[in-house]
Image (cartoon, rainbow, N blue to C red; front, side, top):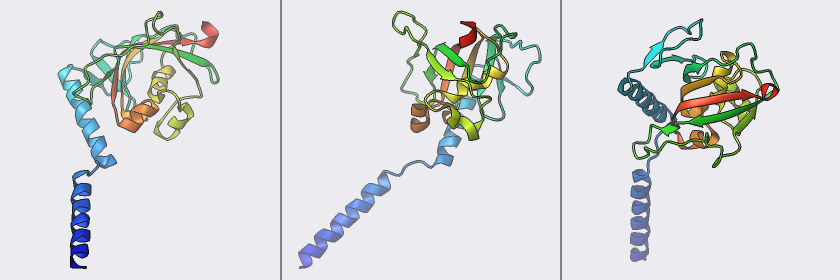
Length: 192
């Protein structure tokens, strides 16, 4: 009987030690890690974060605007045809290149869907209006952060952006992966 109790207590002790070693990070800790990673990325790349959005839509290559409603940083490379803005219910086609997951130091790969031979179909979503953190579920199945620049650019607009994990794809949200896109190109259904 004593041996049985001893074995049970040993197993309980091992279980407690095992679970304490597998302590998961809290959401608040993950957000702090992300903030540090974004700040590091900004410093390493000598980016300038603008306090106000440029009215003329002209950004210098190292200037980014941080959208206060989403935390998405973006730089307009080409404003596109601003006479043709996206409409509610319209399908938006997205091609990107230079996608990097910069919160993971192990992954230095850049991803792209810009090669028409290997990726004949762009990413698509239906525009349902401006996005913010509380309504990002309107864009489930895509990257809600891609929607942010659409209030400023037109058909064939091109941006680069930093997308926090909570505005990333569902896979980025689940893995808490912040992304950088070197080039995101937009086309609108009615203009294609």
